[in-house]
Length: 405
Image (cartoon, rainbow, N blue to C red):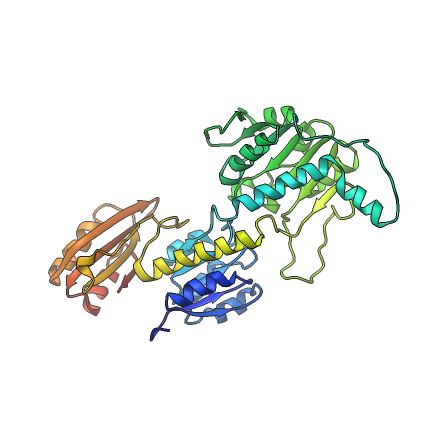
């Protein structure tokens, strides 16, 4: 381990491969098996430069304000709604996630659940375990030739589209953004159109606030009688009470739910939900992306992003900062790297360059990118890059964060 190594805190059982990547890159890694409450997290982050979490840990504005040494957060999952991204940006904390690493795992679970629901496998299984032999084809269907409606055609929704079509399903989708259809999938102009035409609906939307309550009484009423419903996206997008009513009435033939608005904080806590013990309903504990392959891929991917940011300032695929690859030119190996995160207003780069020139600091390489209200520039310099340069850059009214390597 290198002297003065950056401290890393990994919560919620991050895969050992993630620990290995960070340790081999020279970081001091501490692990914890579960999420931490807000006060405990603030205490644990004292002196920590990099934080790794999954979906349960809540990184609030209060946590970010207190974590003075924190430079980056890695969400070892797809979603980042557990992090206050606006506060993270304001404090100059980069946030990374794994938008692709567990896509296949989610898709395979969705396909498995569609088949299980269409064949009432959980009901047959429960009766068999109770000693009841009921051999019947009533209510059981092949999925071949049936229509799957996908709400949200991003990384997961589009791959589900391809796999479902390969199994003989017709695929229709709806997304608020105009997405290119893959294979023979057809885009619907509205959610109402999709609900009227599909026999199985699967949600794959992101965690943006606008999606809260996306699917409620009206949407369930618009679904075709005896259709199937899956939610493997976010718990808060669905009105669970409305789903329960439409299952109990027989309007819906079955459902599979992997995410819930209120979830236990750790294993062993009781799970309470109105959908418990409802026939032909599959409930899983937020495990759509939890395969050994996916968790290993996520561990390696996110750990690598955290290490690249800490070592080089690279922000490619950051969810809140402008994306800068930031390779280190060979010619500047003996020099310094300056990373400057700032508010995106005119004249910042000119002011920054003037300050460096006044201190006799020569710029060898410079990369700037902007994203919304913030800009991020990475500079490789020779000459002076001492505390006086840092102080001058920090004094710029537009500065959010300055780091010098």
